[in-house]
Length: 48
Length: 90
Image (cartoon, rainbow over all chains, first blue to last red; front, side, top):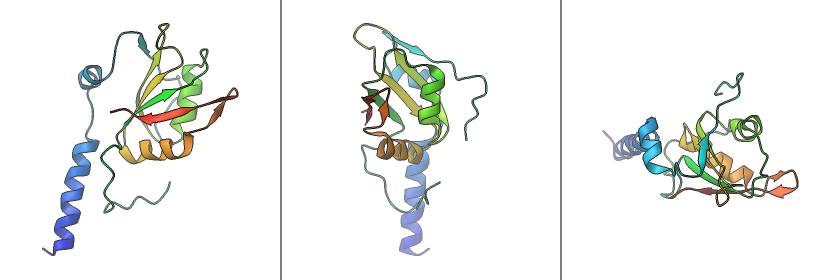
């Protein structure tokens, strides 16, 4: 394992951590619920 | 899509939740999903409805690079002659 490879692996792991799926509860715990409403995505919305 | 170089480390303040200010009060879900949706998959949008939160919103992206693209491109974006302010939510 070359140092570069190790570095890339560590970044990958860190990215996965920062990019892992957020559950509704987690989002609710992070964001205010007071005074805000969760919008319904438009019917034809598809995540690109 | 811009080339994403996986090896470049993202600055710590970059994250997937964006705090948007200076939105027109009567902006709709379709408009918000249209403006932000073209940068990537959106996990959730939370729009301010109270007196002190109107005109602001939280936009949660699925992918951190998409959120970064949105911030880089949308700051100062003109919506109904209002300039959007897009920040990373800390």
